[in-house]
Length: 484
Image (cartoon, rainbow, N blue to C red; front, side, top):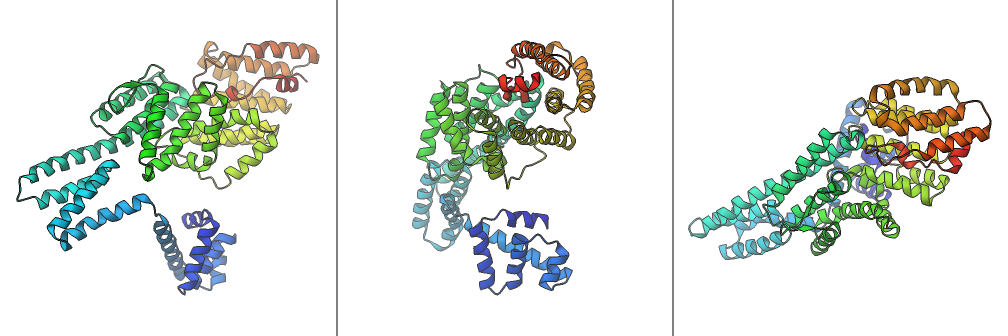
């Protein structure tokens, strides 16, 4: 039942009204009323059964039928350029039985050209399979058999590249939270595997997938990695952007490319952000931000969308007031559905919400949000990130002047620092010193001098894994609060 409720909750107002009207027009009043109750009223199953005057068995049947009707509507609504192609594919069998050989051959040759242009390997296998049969009595059968085998192999290879791409970004999530050498080696191996497969085919689709991975890898894992184009030449990131732009413009009717344009804009945002080209970064930031919730939910197979939230934090610090940040968060993610099994994204999204509270100086709400995050997920595998988040929690207790909770947490943090080594956690050691000085007795002027000295020594450049302190400026405003 929760699945049906969730689907109905996410229907747009126009979709809801259309489905409701269709049910009423087709004499399915009880299904329409069930839809209305689930959309507009917060009632449990027992109360809905009472309202509809049905028994549990009839209610179960009603729910099932409503679910089918909604799914049918959503499938019928999925109309677009690819739908026309799918109709053509479905027609191949029909014309093979009903049309003359000359017409069938002409139709298949036209489809072959169209599918080749759009790099639709799976659809091409159906064309060549049919052409192979039609030429069973001619010498062309061997020719079409070879093409069929080639495109079956290519289809499998393309599926493999998509699997590699998804696996790469899954592993990058682990690298992002731990920066372990072992995981970096795994990422390098996946990068090489992508190269080895994509160089076997002159495929614009494989080129795009390879660029998604290699550009990201070059920016965040290994700056020495090469970006290889379709002709097997080494090219720059900006040349790759230009080639992908051209591909997506050439095949603008391709539904996949229409959606993958968002990944390209995301990569441009990250690239120009690293280059400190603010205007260009903001342009692509705004393009991605328009679809932020959709991007975070649905694009993990093609990139690491959680990183958008980090750019969003930096943008918030620079451009928006704390009130605007909170309001925008509520509006953008009011209907957000997150997969708790995707731990890196789960941590980043929950931390972004925590950051909103911190930016608004709601330290108690911030502390509560961090405690909820630590309680909901196990971060035993990510000891560095776990320590960073716990230290950030200690900062909230420090700003709240909650000595008891601060001291209790600091004992745990100190033990963890000793186990992991002070040398590699220099910034954490300095931040704990700042907090201890902040809560110590003494003149504000003396405290301010010590805090300023420690903060000047904090260097986050060496921190390769996720740290909240990369997105918090120990500037005058915060230092003044800590000095009181």
